[in-house]
Image 1 (spheres, rainbow, N blue to C red):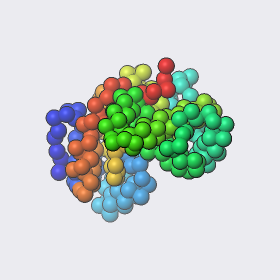
Image 2: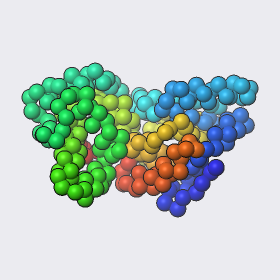
Image 3: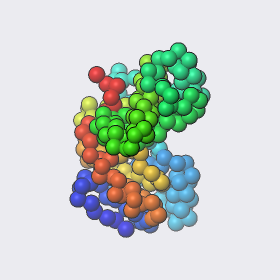
Image 4: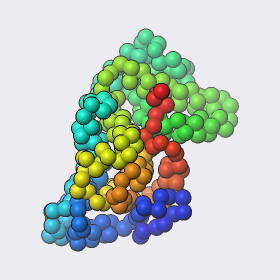
Length: 267
């Protein structure tokens, strides 16, 4: 079903358990190209398989994941921002081990795990929830402060540690810390160019459908947010029947930030 929500952008069409609407739209075709964003490759293959079974035309449909979009946007921005290179998880673990050894992660205290894999998991979780956006981090710290003592101090310490680790990683590489960081940079580029970067990289795309997500991370919300603000494409978000109602309730708060894609590390 397609559901409205008063606190969501009016140009966002939200679907819960309504997979057939996507398939029907792709089968029927429309002027321009529909970009189908699928963060998980399995879901992409499932959609492609169902389109083949329905003998749907292949023209006018393009599949990508958010990192693909980020690479393409930054590729079309000559001389703007960092490269499209990203360090992988193995490199991050090695860097975290070094950061932890020399004490440059100032908030890695007794409430924070010492194992590099656990620290990376913590960094990833805070990244998914906040995108390191100043407003979301402020809300998360406020929520941690409302927890009973001494859990409140441990929670704030873990938040600060995740931010410090991300900052330390950024200082140790000229590449993006992760695919998520690359997408955030592309989102910032869309804001900075007032959508010109999108029109340059995706001139024929008239509709974007985001499908196959069991959760909506901060960076996914920010990507959709900036597309709604700075482009003229129609945006559809398809949520699963089981988790969709819960995610739909969370979406307004994820969208409720200024400057989507901004991070606390920027001057």
